[in-house]
Image 1 (cartoon, helix red, strand yellow):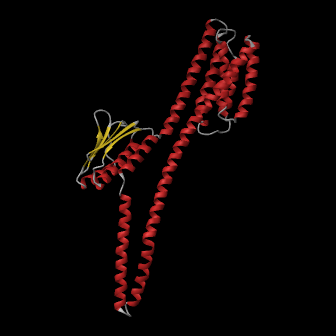
Image 2 (cartoon, helix red, strand yellow):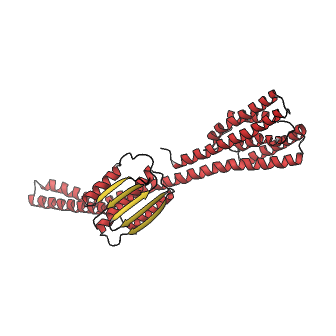
Image 3 (cartoon, helix red, strand yellow):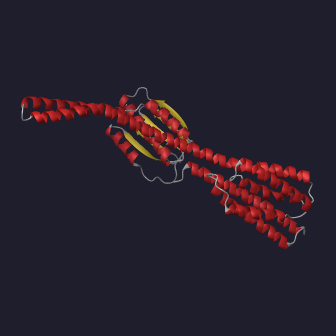
Length: 371
């Protein structure tokens, strides 16, 4: 399953591919028009078209090589540049719209900008604009000033657009990586806290139990009364330690419904899903609120992991929770282990649970608990 950043990357690349295809069609029409007006011969037109298409054909490959980072120039980039130079040299002469032909050169410059630093790109662009201006003025008879202005604008806007597209992808990727890193760090911190709590709870007790057990073993053959007393202390300490561990675990199991709703809203909206919450749960018992908090957490996890929802509505009324989202993707594949566990928890507490797609194209999670 592709992640959202990868999907965004594909969309941006396909958008670029479409732009390249449209540019190729527009310039090919100039070649056809030049042949019809008999401004160039058919062999000239074929040569110009081959160079044009060859130059543009390399572009999607080059973009995919350079979109995630800034690699060194490659043979594909050099080949595309050579074909671009040849295409500019074969410009259809002296006709309406022929001035657009030099876009081939500035388009190659926009691809080159993905490989070179900004200063180097500017230097190459200045030289490219000067050379094409002189060539177009000499061969095609175009006014050099208007040609220079047009080329300069094209040489600025096309590379800027290409760099902007890549920057958008980098921003999306970094935001996603940052969110994943925060989630991983939060889990690591929680594990560390739990380990620290267990150490604080059990470290001292287990050390004392160990010492008393060793002492009781030594006293067993010397003084049975003292050995029995030490073993009684061991039993008492073990029982106290077990009770402390149970309290600690129960503390992790208890969830606050209001805090869970607030956390779920933040998580869903960070994932791009608008979250609407209507909660009327003040009259519920603490046990019922905890059960609903678990249902909210598992329902939100299900939305984040298994759907592409853009909207999620959470309604709690009279001990009944309903979570609806619009992220249904095809037939249901069956409930996961998390939903099975939640169903068992609800049933054991005397409630009910159901989760399935609806005829309206939504996914509905419904949990009812004793008030």
